Length: 221
Length: 146
Picture 1: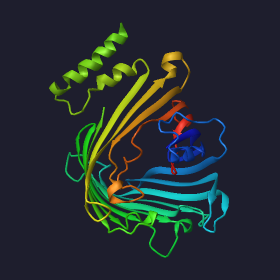
Picture 2: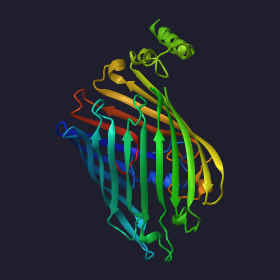
Picture 3: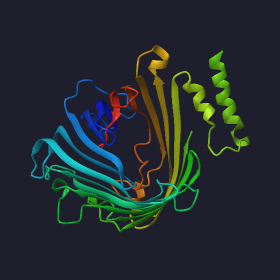
């Protein structure tokens, strides 16, 4: 959700950008308690801060587009540890990449892309999710003039030690196949088929793996 | 006088849209009519039906929707405050969460969330036209990757 914040960016040159952000970290607690249902509660003097810094590169490598981001965040709030204590502060680093590997000659943005986002929290015994991976591949412009996109995505948010109560699996993972054609400017359809491995594992539920079919339509006016 | 013209263009645009053969939902003129007064807006709507075919808690189907109304006010055009603008957006989530019957924690749908109307962002932006640097202050979305 959202909180009181200050954000700035600075472009070093055409390729490199630096970003800094400071957020009120108390807003999370309000949201979790359902005390800020309509978003009107915010404070100008937070007790805890969520600080984030990022460097990104955006350009093209021998004609193929690429975006790379490297960042780090720090949350000054108190977090429970797996041994029953409390710790002040969580820190994380993350890396994101979205790289075109093949460009269609007629329309350079069309073609085959690989992407990945990986994050790692240093305080492994305090983080609800101690590392996560979100990666996949997509093809833009499969059918000429359809402005469509076909993708496969894998998501794995690994549960930290804090969440592990017994030896059972506590991490759910998601495999998704998706196809999104554009009807006109501002109107698209999307179909998705997902396979969820160990759904509910994060809440200590042992359920059969789920197969979920989704259809959506999006309008932008 | 000019404001009536803008309202007229917006309404006429919506009514006449089905007659146009232009390959876009709203004619450009509908947006540029308000932009000339320094007001920029957008309305996004996503409707989704998700069906749990096998596994999870229950095999069931649910509908949910996500409405997002965004407004940008150009303070340079209105008050002459250089490179300064105010932005806000309000979201409305409705329907049923598919995670209630899939049983997953992370959520199988990225438009899922608490079904309510929520002021998501309200901030002041200072952005020199060369885009060399910029700053935002206010209510902003917390994202672990910015």
